[in-house]
Image (tube, rainbow, N blue to C red; front, side):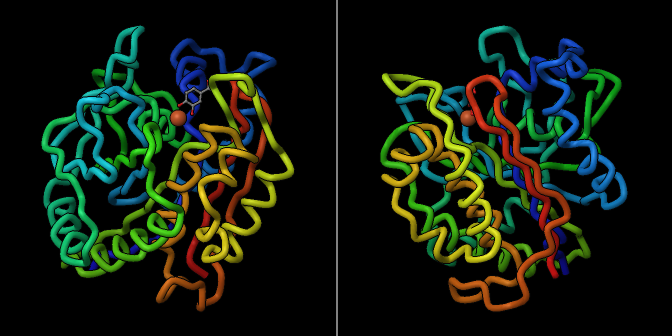
Length: 292
Ligand code: DHB
Ligand code: FE
């Protein structure tokens, strides 16, 4: 059977993608950001997944105000990098896993979560920047990502966004779905976005280091309490775009210590934890968790 072997969490700042694409990772501003991922790049070389289930948000790229799915699973065979205004990022096409994605859709919908099935979609920085951070630069034509990726888009751009509690419960349903897939696949689940940031309005530029670190501590050790936090906490403390963090709770809910909405098993092992301010307008957070 398939199983979840790790969860990976990272911010997905678009300027990080630009820094990689324009070979600026060793410039003074960016060096400490990329240094924080070196250990994880080594770890993933030693622990390569067969498939990545990648939770991210679309930033009005594939979707718009015309159509706003709360939870959308990519079931296609491939996903082209989107043009977000400066041409598509020079990264390889993202290959999907239609068979596993269809199985997860079947199982999760039957567990009463209403997913939108997306058979055609371009993917934006929310998905491609995390891949670049963990796998480094890849030639867009000759190169490829090391494994198939199932995109899972969550609406955190246009209110109403799903609650942390619902995201956490959904993660548990996704693990059940993966564990009922009849092939010995090693699947990683990634949660992306965050940490504190606000891109617009009077508080644009808001960063809250203390809140971010406390949120990370709680998300690791007591995810049920973390999932109970209401939206207003994120908006008030972590800025309007800090709400992206609810996506991390999907990945956390999929870890095997979580049963019936609580962490009952031994907590996951923290293989790597990194926090840095700033990257563009954002506090960067990154975690690698493995089942105990
Ligand atoms: C920035 C961060 C994001 O998460 C995003 O989606 C867009 C921009 C930023 O910090 O500039
Ligand atoms: Fe974002």
